[in-house]
Length: 168
Image (cartoon, rainbow, N blue to C red; front, side, top):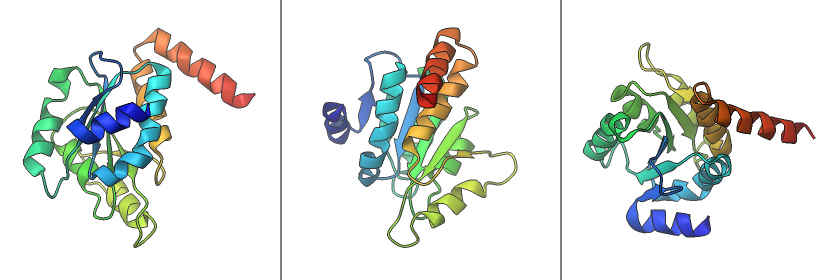
């Protein structure tokens, strides 16, 4: 998986299994990649193909818009957005798509990630964003997989087995 992270750094895009991605992951900064590696690994463990892009809502708004708006046409079913500080990325993504968006607030040096968390959970009515814990990359991937599993019996069985293993 380390190779995948290196490839993502070089190209700005990552395809977990060379299959059509079901989960799209967007990072506000390449510095978020180390934490979000956990999401990539968790999705790979579940066999869920994904794509990854690095684009800031503030520095690359047109790229974020195009990526989010086109996600459904690319076959993506769930989006994960990770950002820190003025973490508007998940909300911006949610404004451009009807797909579910899961936000991952990143830990920051200023306020320990509380700034990120609060900016993600305080979305206005009509633009919901599900939010996991600060640096909760793996939980975002698990939640995305649970959403996908509502229409996929095999994926649901994978999650049941995963949860049984956790209980051991």
